Image 1 (tube, rainbow, N blue to C red):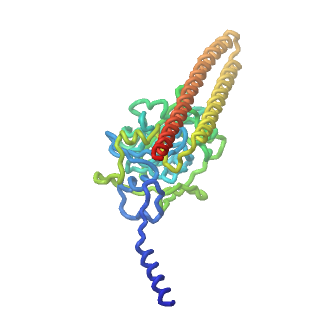
Image 2 (image 1 turned 120 degrees about the horizontal axis):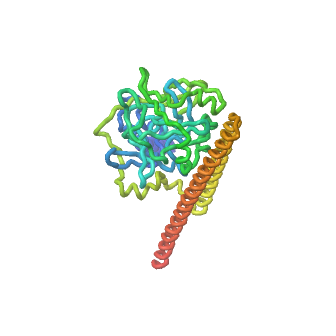
Image 3 (image 1 turned 60 degrees about the vertical axis):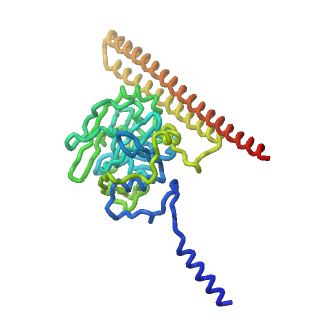
Length: 393
């Protein structure tokens, strides 16, 4: 009996020693999967980001990355928060993979793919430009073709598309759940006319700094104290953390490698099938048609509430501004001039607001039709499967 016991025991040990872990393409790799301490190059991006998205061959940038299902209406620099550090305004992403695409390289937009990331090797606190007013604060990812002039990026060679901009009511700029307050991009054209643009990225002795907006302005708008966080080096990639008075953020030094390439690369046509406006859906994240409709309705209703609330605040703010101006003049003729200007401005603003509502309604209908079409396509596939099964019988 003892002889058989030892035979079985030794066999189990041998079988266990022969087991090899092979990570699936869409699976989050274990921590020990990567060597974080060797010399790193762009191949590290290719390996690390593969479980979280797809790599596509895209001219003229080479290999670009599209993230898996980041969320409805997602845009870069929306899921996370802003903190003030020695490097200026620093983005702290909620994503496990956020240490890379929001601090290296640049984001760009494609009508078929949506948002995609172009790798780079220079670390920055956030590669964005800014807009602000007393009411709004906004930022937009810098495109790949906007580079340093000497040691600075202080202006853009062209106006960014309106949809690039992310605007919020300035009061919520320091909120850790900033995505809840991002306004629908249909508001952007109006808000751009009410805001001032500023790009202020430059290189100092210790690295790239982004001081686009004066912290004093943020303090006045948010009515909150601005804390300065120390940037601390994280030993491994992952979600950045605020610990006490510091921010733990992984930011390795990397070098470019022309020989490096992702293990799996999709062509444009294949990527277009998988990517729908920047959302690459993983199989385990797929939901039923009724769940998808319900989620879409909730998100759309939230967007409409945000739009209407923002518009109402804008009108109220404008009326207060003109009332103060009327109170500062003494002559009735001057007050009449101010009143006329107010009426004309409000009329123009309300017309813009109606246009915004019309645009968001049109977009929402397209989104709903897309879900309906998706449901019909799925039903047809299921019906064909049933027909084939019946034919075999």
